[in-house]
Amino acid sequence: MRIYADLIREDFEAYIADVQDYFRCVDEERARTLAEAREVSEDYGRFLNAVE
Image (tube, rainbow, N blue to C red):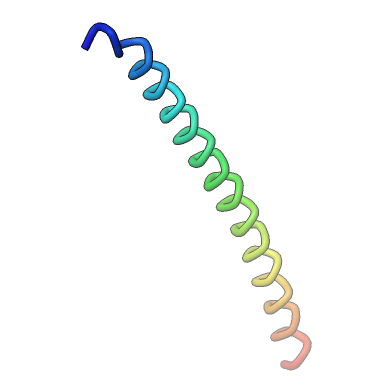
């Protein structure tokens, strides 16, 4: 196990970095989608006001 300790450590660190990148991407997309949904809801509210 000692022979492969450095290799396993490097693989683990790369895995964690990839997981962090993934969650950062998901968080950014979540924020973008929420902003888009807010805009669509506001547009829909204006539409309802216009037809009433």
